[in-house]
Length: 111
Image (cartoon, rainbow, N blue to C red):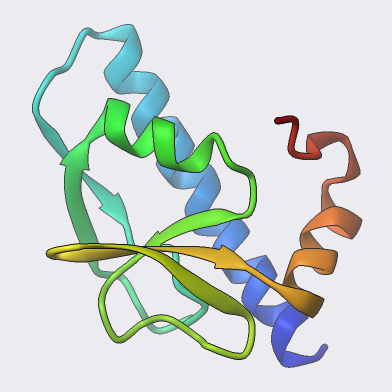
């Protein structure tokens, strides 16, 4: 498994956890910030990013975008779209983007 593939798999795990946090907040009418997992490619990272669930939802509506802590970005597989104080919004590029398409072909970006 190469770096891009490994990174994509790790990020998908954190994304699915974060989607459950976001869905739970929606169902229970939670407002305010919640601790979302950093969606970086590091298997050793278990850090969290505090942000409102609706803000998280608006970022990840773009399927290639992920939230990561500053310094956790990987320039060879993603580019920084936004710097938001205590976190970054990154977008997958190249091989990592293609890996997402292969793993989840039904979730193509519409827009």
